[in-house]
Image (cartoon, rainbow, N blue to C red; front, side, top):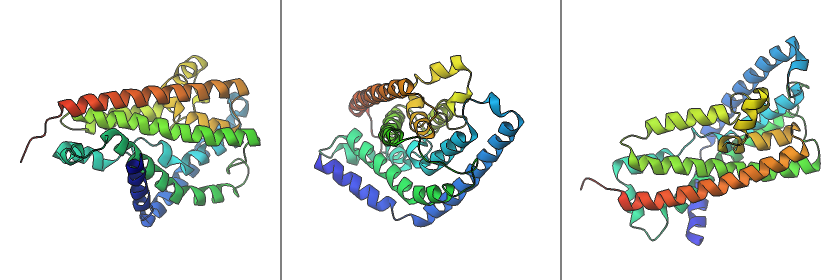
Length: 267
């Protein structure tokens, strides 16, 4: 266990060094956040009663999404992992007395958390002082905030566990680009990254909420914005835990199989 904590600490420390990249990301996320809010504002002004969330809740959802984008964005995968599989450097990791799956999991967690640490605080600080309807409001209650923190961590773990399966599947392909495009597109649509899930028709939403993608960011952001009832929160947290266990077990077993079948070419 200590060796995986060391992998985590090293990658986390390394991630904190990219301050210029973080600053560029903050500017980009502010621009994107304002763009999304202005689009929703146009729709809300036309017919405010037709939407399942208030504009204030939607604005909070969008700003929290931007602040913790590094937690949920599956397109922020580790290029280093894909490169090691493609060019054969994975052989060095397979020779070490470690589980490759655990090493990659700890490194992926560290990368995402370090990116979020550098970016989230400026975004949250500015969004909190924006006018009503454009800025971020506080949580509905202390209970909502506590559950938000729990589901935020669970969402991060589900996202990393899902990305781990994509990494392992790259063992069985010539190029990982196709995998990345397909899975990233699925996650962006079904997780609420483009449109919050409450805006979908009820039948579609009920199905989408049972998929692993909804457990990534939809649950935490909706709990914070207050758009979930207590029974809905309980159900969503159970679904998160179930999918986390399924994805971790599946990824670990698939990784063991891939490590036995992998063929390294070259000299």
